[in-house]
Length: 125
Image (tube, rainbow, N blue to C red; front, top):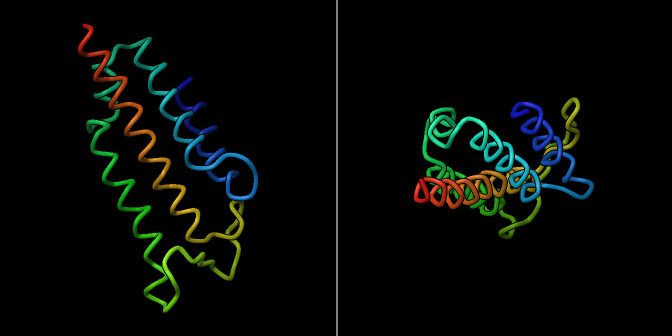
């Protein structure tokens, strides 16, 4: 079930570029996938699967989102101006700085939700 939900969360992340969805909803679905895994296998096994504590995801996601926000300044544009590649990528389509911002949000949401829920789970054990 975990791989299917993670693939679906990535689909929602990429689909959210043009339709409802995006980093927040995709991140919630990915977090739910790991929470369901922890329900069936235990929190410790899920943490071993992640290899790093979910709280480490938060600064990584914030960094990616911040870089995507300030990247336009490198080409003389105002902060948070959308930058787009000229050529579409197969399956994904046009890629721009908004996608990287969504990826940052996705990672932050996964980190925050899993940190909160795993902390509660470990405290109650």
